[in-house]
Amino acid sequence: FGGTIGVPLMFGWRAGQLSEKMQGIDYAWHSTGTFCSNFGFPFLFESDDWPEDCQARCTSMPTCMYFTAYLANGWCQITSRCVEQAEAGDRSAVTFAKQFSDTNCASQSPRADCFGGWVAEL
Image (tube, rainbow, N blue to C red; front, side, top):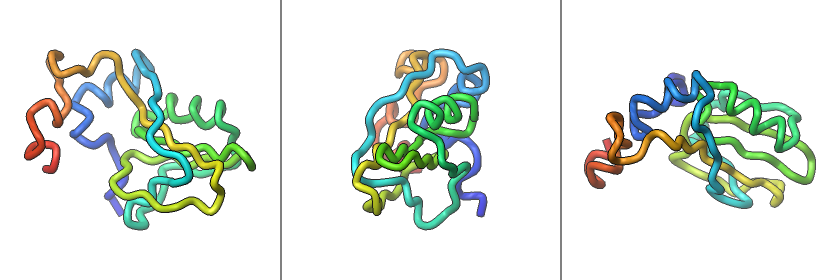
């Protein structure tokens, strides 16, 4: 099952370090009404957390890069990648992507997409 373990290289090698230190972390809206299904690979974590708790848990987990919060019923799904999405049974689902203020294209650890599409696809 190793497909969802660890921080994908597309986020840059410093993403794991910054996530471990909980520094420079923010979240950006990724999708509404869907969740990261990732071809059926398991979530890193799944529980009955409300959105604020889900975000805090993602921040505290170095391998978390996406979380889906279900606003209507207080459910939380945490994953390291979001390569495939599926429609959520609960339309209140909102997925957020972890962002780092220190991983721009000019940094020592640029994201894969800074090198063009062909590298990001690797």
